Length: 420
Image (cartoon, rainbow, N blue to C red; front, side, top):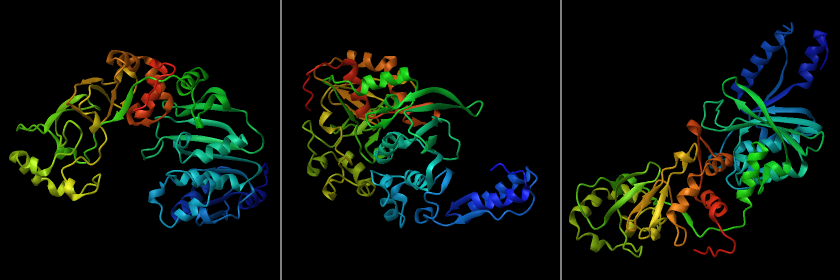
């Protein structure tokens, strides 16, 4: 719109500007803000804004008509959806993993665009790598829609624990490159980082954004074909740590040392299994009267858990069996939340000792020292940051699979048999 005629401008605003929201309060707030903007241009007459209070999931009259779609879609996980769930699953972008409503809104926005339309959203960046975002990523790549992107990384613009990105999808041409920006928390402005080819940021069917030189490292790690004969696993999951883990004041053959991998701190755990990882029988446990009475006092709490397997006869078992088979093996524990490699808390754990609240690594062939050296290399911290699994305070998290992928790259060899 280029009109200087205020009457014509009013008509154009009422004709060409549209909005839709399921919350009436948001509609009214938007009208008030738009009124203030047009007043800056000398237009004080009442504008009859075409702002609709309705369900975007069920409204399609804007389809194929919009030059621009701008929005901050709702962030609602699929398990929090009720009657909307069936509508969500009708969309291509909604058919994958534990989807989020904002992903479906990308598809809705794209449908609203005309053949040369442009969409800009601010949303969580989780679609970069999530299973739920797979269909959306494929669609963006197949149609070469991504024109530019600004990753806000650890900066959180909203009063919510979510990590966001600003994305522009453009239907007017096919984009072989994306202009990549990051956000400066001090100036509160985006700054240009680099122009990336699709092959730079589309790695193993996921999206990763950084400088090309750093993305090359990530590709080397992810596409590495060597294998290290090491296993990276999650520690115990009792589902009642306050019961099982304590600085017990009494002794028992069923109490063993345990390290909290996230902090590298030692305590004790009631471990109701033998050295073959079989659950002990309750009749044997009763012989340890002090411990058994302690557990009886906590029985109601333990029965409220989702026990695996779900049997009341196993009320004193860990909630999950993970980690139990490796109790009587030597291992090292590591935390899974760091800013850089030097933040790793690596602890030697002897056979007969346990690990919880983090990861552990075992190997019959690779020495602990070699594993530690690989993890403490700056490349590991760089790799973890490139994965983009942001946490508050500037931290990054990573999974057992992520560590295994890195160790395969760093210390792996060709042709290693890595069957567990």
